Length: 315
Image 1: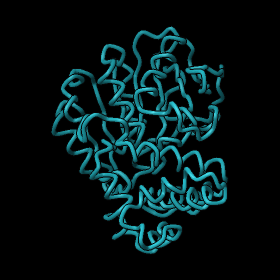
Image 2: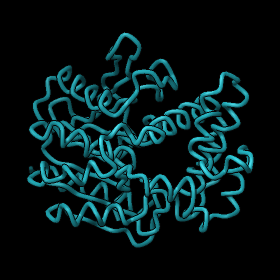
Image 3: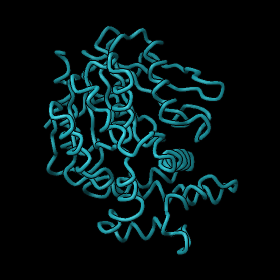
Image 4: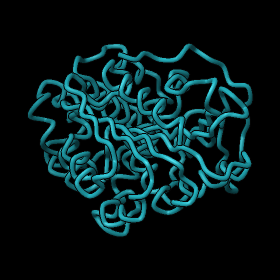
């Protein structure tokens, strides 16, 4: 069982203006002359965390991490304007160009897997390998399962807390009802909805519920940026042209070495999506972790991801 690499601090941090409105925070960690890898965080709206630096051998990798539009230390916080999948794909290219990188390993989990796959399909010549976790294809069925009906059957007690801010007459379209409140001009209304939305995901993300993960969303900025941006993307089908865009285009990246790590008991992004991706892309190496849910930090998943980044070294 592999554990995190030691804690490490960035050797470079900066900000990149990607539009008139948005400015991104980025950092570089590890070996400045190492193999480039870019870390794509989840959410959307989740932001990066110091532990995200630790999935990679710092002696081998030049690790680039950044907060996506409206997330973490990027500004303006929780901004929905000019915030869509294709803008994020463009931002990744802007960062690659800024760093002077020709090709890099792309690492992403949950929404980060969605973005990693979309970026790779759009710019396959820039991707040397993919490491993916908790596959999320952003299909309507996946959104319905987690935010409307499905996961509710497994966590009925926590589900009741999730739906509490929404009147009964609006509960047949929960994402729409949440979007209405998360974009309300009243801050109190926004915050109540944001905490309920974010804590639902935090509570269901691990095989064993983590109180600490739930309490992280007591922070208003974290809750609002996470919930507003997620709901914005899900209201808009993640800005894809079709409901099954990734699988329809995965043939464009089947030549790229890929590792998929998936928790067997992932309720947020059930294993069905990872299996559907693997069937469409049999060359990708799929590892289903027998005792894990959704979170990257769970021991089996963490170990599988580090094994995957180590396996990418020779490519």
